[in-house]
Image (cartoon, rainbow, N blue to C red; front, top):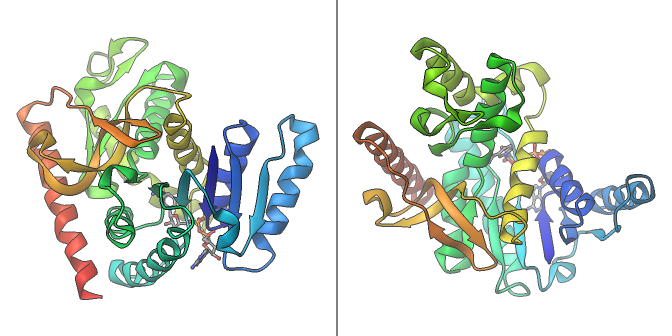
Length: 307
Ligand SMILES: NC(=O)c1ccc[n+]([C@@H]2O[C@H](COP(=O)([O-])OP(=O)(O)OC[C@H]3O[C@@H](n4cnc5c(N)ncnc54)[C@H](O)[C@@H]3O)[C@@H](O)[C@H]2O)c1
């Protein structure tokens, strides 16, 4: 598989490294900064003899080198900085995502697009709109990350390995994240039997604010290890290396009573993109929260028209 990672900042470069280290793909890393992707790719290739992988990564500033990509992961753009309003970020990153999509589609007309750039839901909608690709070939990364953060917090709370914790969040990042406590388990046991409601609420709140917690600690920049692991997991699943459903920002066409909007739902991925939206058994409250998240996203996407 050939994967282009657009943006060679923290998220882009770590995503590229994870893909190439796992032998998942031939990776093209691209950025507008001259020399940056080339230098990073050279450095990664030099780690190959030590770590033990085929050094199938190149860096470039030229979209001609991305031709024939099966997947394009878009990480180009600014993270939100202190003092920056949502509309400022929307304006800046919309310009970048629009340009990126226009530049790679002529030579990769059959690619699957995985959007990582924030604000995620709006940028995913924009990438679909600008590309004109079938919506199942355009998706956003948020739920894999939020679910991973929740699993990590549950594991730390209970002093167990995160590998025995299953949990999923739907909806979107932040306020519109929809945690599903009824579907969370630890070593096969329902989470709700292991912690009280106050603890559950605290774990969900920390997950919702996890990005801001990391920004507060780093002072400069935002999270990238878990975000890149999440983007790489999506590519891995598209490649067929892993077949479980993942929570992905996907275009709904009536599932969960939600129509014509991108929102985080469990999906099956394949080389066709989103091959199925999995309809979990949600109760009335969970369904209402998911639908409210979808309507919030629909309203936010309307702001793209005001730019
Ligand atoms: N969806 C998520 O869960 C999630 C998680 C983490 C980060 N993000 C987002 O991912 C984006 C990248 O974060 P980061 O930490 O890597 O930022 P970063 O500043 O480290 O890297 C961004 C890179 O994009 C490049 N870039 C800018 N304009 C470009 C263009 N037109 N073409 C190609 N490259 C261009 C920059 O030169 C830079 O190297 C941000 O928008 C951030 O908010 C999303």
